[in-house]
Length: 116
Image 1 (tube, rainbow, N blue to C red):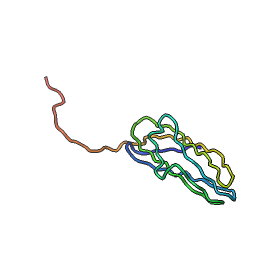
Image 2 (cartoon, rainbow, N blue to C red; image 1 turned 180 degrees about the vertical axis):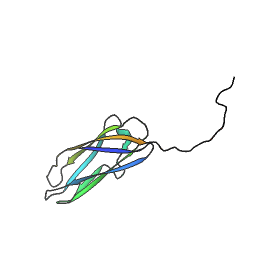
Image 3 (tube, helix red, strand yellow; image 1 turned 60 degrees about the vertical axis):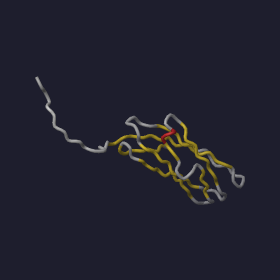
Image 4 (cartoon, helix red, strand yellow; image 1 turned 90 degrees about the vertical axis):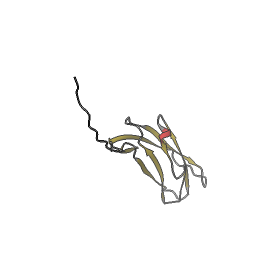
């Protein structure tokens, strides 16, 4: 699956990855960010998520758009054994795109355009 972070330059965006547990036993996942721009992404609520039986839970991924070029990373969710059950390893491709640039401020000035 793919997660897209689109917004203005310097905007901080949070995406929520929702995980479902269809089994009758609890699942626990450790989240790892890897890839070229992994340092620009973060997991503000921590890198561990526990999903109760027959329930769902979510993990938040935060990203601040610092550059015009697209950022790329991969979110890997690795299952920890809980109650003797192992969940599947999940991977999500993450990409960013700058949609617009909001000016920090506008400065007006007058100057001659051309002088002999």
